Length: 310
Image 1 (cartoon, rainbow, N blue to C red):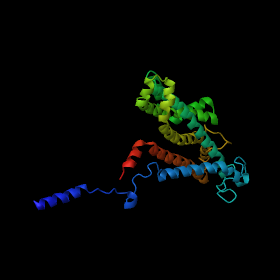
Image 2 (image 1 turned 45 degrees about the horizontal axis):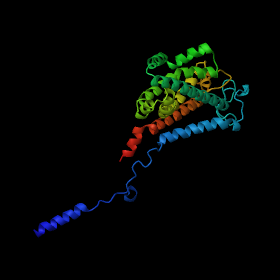
Image 3 (image 1 turned 60 degrees about the vertical axis):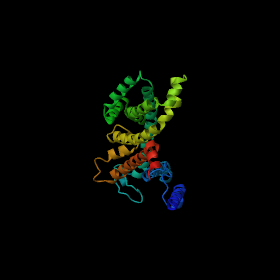
Image 4 (image 1 turned 135 degrees about the horizontal axis):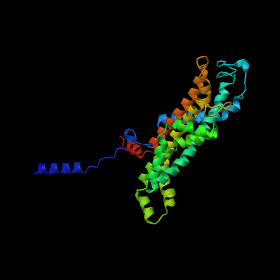
């Protein structure tokens, strides 16, 4: 009897003994998801590369004061040298100065294409996603547009409108709008059936108020990610159009027409292909890295997984 009483008492003390909470900071364990919104290394690299590219294109002409269209027949196809740091082209024009001027044109066309596509694609996507009556007609129109290869459709538009920077923006915007519209529509179909949207509809909110106050804010994260990638597509599209001679026309420079002018002489002057090709590749790579990082950042599954990851 006495032994049993002692055993019961020891077991009750053991059962009632509190378990100390383990603090990751004091126990030496790594903190779990201390920074769920921290950008990955690749995203940071992409943001830094893009910022450096924009900075060089913006302030470069103030330090490198050479006219990109100045002809120097005594320095035709000169390799990189202290006088011409990236060499010259077939007309003696300084390649570094033309890359700076062409980069500004290429990025501006990409930027305006991104803005125009974002506005048009968002409007079409919201109309299609919010209106069950108009949805089939809008989607069939977008399907017809997406049936054509993007650059081929842009070539046809430029053949009709003519070659200019504004027309290049119009052609690329018309070509890439269906991408944005379909993404916005898909997100709108999800958001429109959420409880807070149904509640707003039940209390008599107008369709315009529902779209602007409830649907649109929920669509911004995927829209921002899509437009980041579309910025890269637009730069590549402009380069392709200018490469074949229907985009930015000489003597105005763009990365695409610099590459196009070097087609026949790239074996004799490889720097005319290497440097502009590297500029296009680096800019597109930085935008893709940034877009991937923003996609992870705005993805709720990624944030939940980071918070639950041991």
